[in-house]
Amino acid sequence: MKKKTVIISVCIAVSVAVLALIFLLSFEQTEMNFAQNGAVKFYYNDKKIEAPLAKEDFDSLCELFNGKLFVSDHPSCGFEDNISVSFNQGEQVFCIACDGCPVIYWKNKDRYFNISDNENRMLKEILQKYGCYFPCI
Image 1 (cartoon, rainbow, N blue to C red):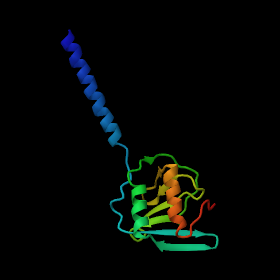
Image 2: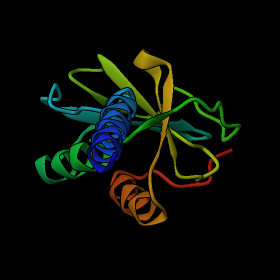
Image 3: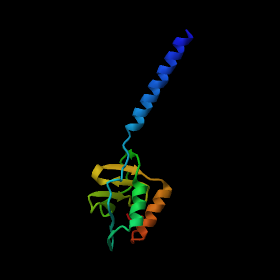
Image 4: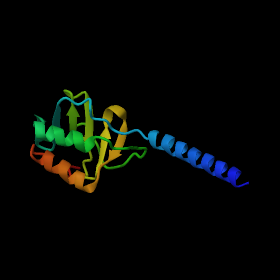
């Protein structure tokens, strides 16, 4: 009887572990290994900024955007192409929330992902170097 209980317990534990692994792997994450160069775009009021990202800023933004889980939400933060960071000569566009909230919209994938408040501060500091400011609504 003890042996049967142990076998059942082991089977349940293995099943739970497999299901947990499948569950974790089903979440799609951002991957920035495609990025070779980047640029910032900020068209708001009288500002018309389009500038390539410096190597250090490019590396920081790739690291900041990499490995984020996509969310199924459609936030009302306000996103547009004119307030964005793009990679590979504009092939991939990441719209920055105009109201300053810590959400990024990956336009090409039509998906959103969150960044932490600290990461949001870092993002804004990088973009401010190029003349961007937030909020811009």
